[in-house]
Length: 136
Length: 136
Image (tube, rainbow over all chains, first blue to last red; front, side, top):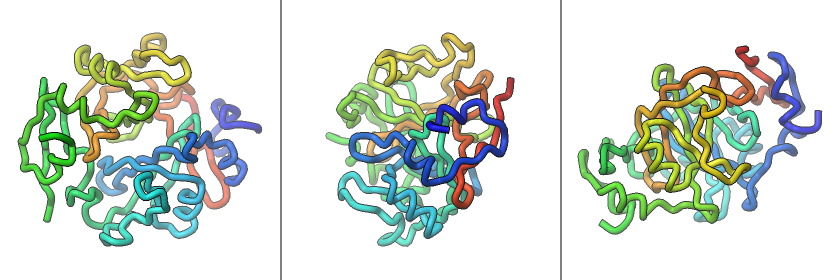
């Protein structure tokens, strides 16, 4: 197999070596792919952030979610300062290997605004409405 | 209010006019933001794709999910050829307005590989494993 395309028709249980697979990931021009964090217990989509190859590898090695902060241009060990860590339950790639879905064990609020999740701005008619408040 | 930052501490029910809010969205250099589609009924994260302002507006107007295809560089009315449409249940922005969460009513498989969702490549140990097969 030479690319993720070769896995499209693959049967259940087909395996590829992780390092080989990571060579196939089409990181963008900043070396990043988007990663969705979903709460393992509730199914709530908590946030979307970005990972580079090192963030993926450190996440898998440590069992704690590590992103790449685009504003700080550095690895971001989620919860390192806030304590609101995300334990890794599973890490999945999509069909094109250009997006990641993380199932996580979230400690405390996921959002820097102290809301449980980041997607609190809902479109309703011609308005965008704040649909939850900080928990603390 | 002059930016999405002004909504961080906002109380429940605070509203902003949609057109004003869309002016705040930090579209990337291709004019796009990532959009996560989550199945309304099951909570399954189905896929991640991209939207430009027009895709967002058409989605809200038509009630059917419209993405922007980066490979075709054109609006992509999801399911237009396959029939596997996504009805809009809700559209939410995150705290930075640089990601969208769509709750959708998915018809048929969401993935172009005929799997129910796109995230079928799971890391297990030193391997990536195909964890589901096409449904048809």
